[in-house]
Image (tube, rainbow, N blue to C red; front, side, top):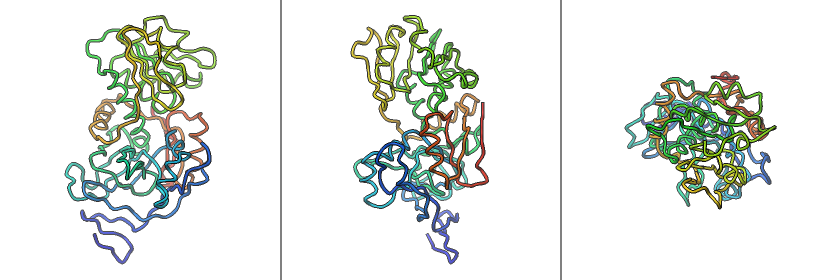
Length: 360
């Protein structure tokens, strides 16, 4: 690697990258959820790919609830003892350079990834997506779908992997299963929209969820067959006993497992994503399997490749109804923290690409 007079690096593959970049960094944890006073956009050195790593020129990212939750976690104070931390999980962009030992990806490839890989105890939080450039292990980076532009692709890695891995843990694909009925507890958020589409992809004939009435049309366009207004009722009040094969509780409210049990068939699965106090039922129905989803595994590009294949045949669309410039990272975080976002909140690295995008 050579440093040129212009201040750019000549990368091993012959690509050029500047010496510094814009990045949204945290200097520590906020005092509570919603306190974003410790994050700001500043200049940082462009990271360099090591052995088995690639450098991504970032076109876009997005905001997930875990992004702003981490900003109030004490672990961030530990991580930032070594200096400000570039934040962000989701990334989509173009391969700028490859390190030694890389063979699958090449310069110019359009890719997507979830930078949530951890290697405790030295690197408890990877991150780094909210910047002009990001480094990732080649093994965790996939080629993006031909059906998505980079803004759309950047909205899907974390929520896509979460939903895809949740379905896999529950036994998908269910070959030869008739009258497959799936419940997604919260439909209009990032994981909900992906999960509805995956349920349809895996052959569910009835896909049930809840949301505000303003989102009914969108959710039905994604594949939901029954959408209930959570202001007026609950899914569990509306369902017959022994009528559901799989419940994906992506909202995770306390007590949901107990409420869901009567509707589940013997042989069915209740799976919850932890984070809001949700837990397994202490008195599950005989024959019902309960699964704590745990954490999303972002380390394997094979899962992203499986999502790409689903997207390439038109079965995985993206919804990005708001997009913010990197410089307005606080605005993007507040939009997500409000709890009223539909789909995902986008972050664009270039002002020219900031736009409202809705794909249905």
